Image 1 (tube, helix red, strand yellow):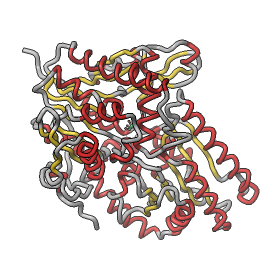
Image 2 (tube, rainbow, N blue to C red; image 1 turned 90 degrees about the vertical axis):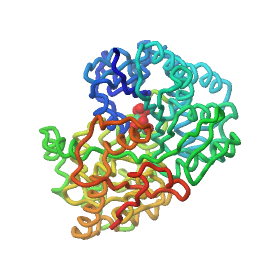
Image 3 (cartoon, helix red, strand yellow; image 1 turned 90 degrees about the horizontal axis):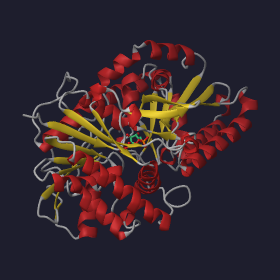
Image 4 (tube, rainbow, N blue to C red; image 1 turned 135 degrees about the vertical axis):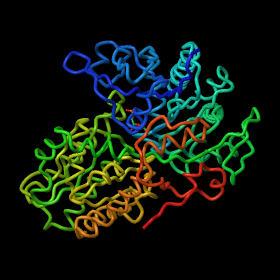
Length: 517
Ligand code: F6P
């Protein structure tokens, strides 16, 4: 008899394939989704379906990052790549998922973000986004599996739960959205047919998971207002058009503290700490994020410039070291943002280098996780000023690895904001003046206070790990047995406050309020 499999479905597999100096090179993919799912993927009886682009032609290949079927070969990860023609992949991943949905869901509307649906975009929806989802569903149905449950990931795959339900009517399905979910006023900026497909696609799941209670509430509000469905706010449920009761839940993403602590002892991190030598001369502000408009790097650098204006005595004693991860460079809007960020850095460096004795902003434009962790250990301040963010795991990783101890400045609109209350200094992401002042406050914070704030956050992160994130989802689906996970020393304490009206039927571990010291 065939064993039943737990099936993960995500756009991305655990490896990227990058065209470098005339050849494809594989390397682990960046991002929270991959890091949280990889331990599960290593378990037996798990399959990970992902979309891969068939190799683009040589000219395209030199332009950007692609994932191809060829690299998805690690047998321990149980990857099942579903190849899509490069044209379909680009329309689905680039033109719709990242240039429309990602931008809309991070409130990046207009020039440099989501700026409208023309005929080309309509075609990309029909011939890219919908086709990719349909091909994925068909590939899963044709794989001859006996799925125990489906864990479907993110905004690339909103239509998929409904498509899977047609093939597997009795198999539990959970969809998790890793990025913020918009309310009706935002979703109405998409064509009517698109938003109905998104919502009804998600309603194919039994459980629709989000990063925060407000995202879950926004989804229910959309179902009520845009589809006219009956919503029970208190229970956090919506009755789908086929009569099933679908649950909306918050499962805040987290990190794996033990794995991180082990990584900190590796030669790569030890060498990077020595090389960067951040703690040795003066103070350092760092940031670690993909180069993406949602991460709001420009406002962060402008706040740093304002800080140097306010506190000229810091010149020569303070550096801003930015670890920027190349991302989605095949898309014009990302290349334009990268150029704009570099323009701002050049301007600030040219202005302050004479007084500071050297350019005060240093950039590492690379995906080097060990180097970034090394910097997090020894920085004075980590700045996370995302315009908006589903969660932002960097803040949680920093809480585990900071040694100096450092201080944390976080945007109020990041999903992690509620969890870092009492530990971080919170800023409004477009408030450059306020961010400059928060940076000044963080730099001046006495070590004892930094240590106390850090300890609070570290404790919270240790009590709600990536394994808890996944375990809570499996619990919600009624999938028994914990297939993975670090053993916690203490009982899990959920980090996010459950929303009014959604707490009643939440999984127990998510319903309890956090112990904010
Ligand atoms: O959902 C957000 C996310 O998928 C994260 O896992 C990761 O940070 C990022 O987006 C990666 O994006 P991409 O797969 O497009 O490189």
